[in-house]
Image (cartoon, rainbow, N blue to C red; front, side, top):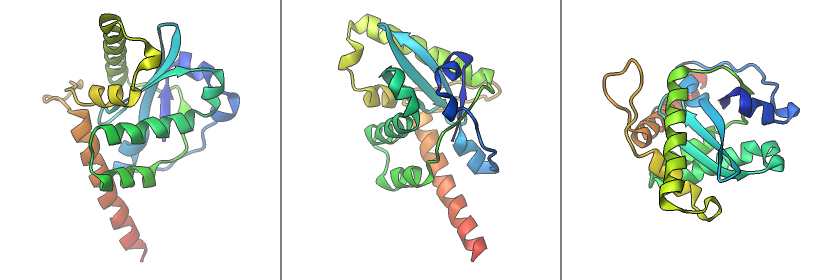
Amino acid sequence: MILHCTKKLYARLPVKLTAPTPLTAIGIQAQWLNWHANIITIQRRQCLIAVHDATRFCLFIPCLVKKDWADLNWHFEDAFINTLLKSDIEPELINIATDNLQPLQFDTVCNRSVQGTMNQIAQEVDFGFYHNRSDITDINHYRISADLSERPCYVKGQKDCIWPFKAMAELLVNLNLFNKNQAAQRH
């Protein structure tokens, strides 16, 4: 999994995590692997927002402290799988997601369209805490991530909107088919 980080987030990562190894991916694999991420501050707490490039599926990971950056891979996988569970996705698709998770790699390559989605999500999250007067330490961030992934997103260059939850489910189905075809070709 490649996490395309903002420079602010990239600077927070421990040195040992920032040296990516080359990945070779094609088609559906390349779609599966690419995420963008940014660090935001809400109520004086560092939070991570990650958005999947192709589907705009969103993860919100709040209250990260310095030691958490070394375990970012665990936090990412935990947030992703639990957000899928909160989204009531089929168990088979969750198994596909779990089977295809890979250790995170980091770079600072950016896509302005995905960054625009991240900025919009950051504003929605920040406003939600302000408007509801809720404390960030008392929230269920999996539920917030699921809610953020169940709203339409408009993407530059596409006429119709994307529904992140549905798009992620379709991507997981296609990834499963791709993996089965690859396995059949090897045998």
